[in-house]
Length: 145
Image (tube, rainbow, N blue to C red; front, top):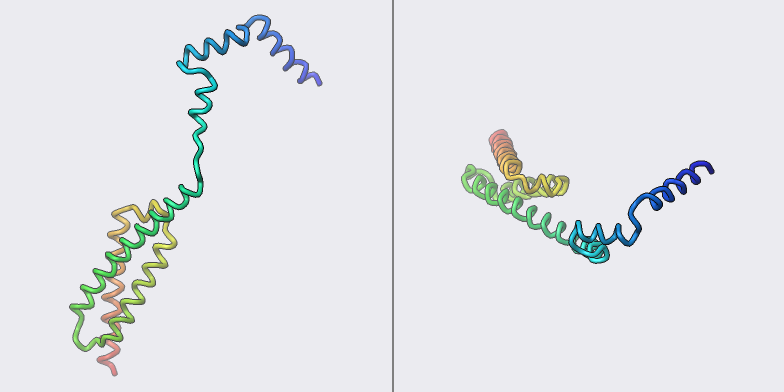
């Protein structure tokens, strides 16, 4: 109870020696330039969290689509130059596996990581290396058979 009493005394002391409430409001209005009610409403602008979430999802989908398209293009170029003894079925299997892996990776990344251009280039190079490794493995298996 002593704490509550001290708090009460300090407020009373401030009122007794400080500026009256109306003058405090006028002083604040002069310092900030706007009435306090106007300031409060301008600060508390309504926001719809669903829209923000939807925008983030759209951004993620767009970034993922760009990355997948870049990887697809690189894979298709690499498969076009692959040896002729690689069948279309094997080419499609390689392409599908690398694209599936790309989608798993992009799903695990944050939006900031998806936006990082250096990371995107590094991943595209990695996916291309995986494609080459899979091509070489299939070609080696074909030669062994």
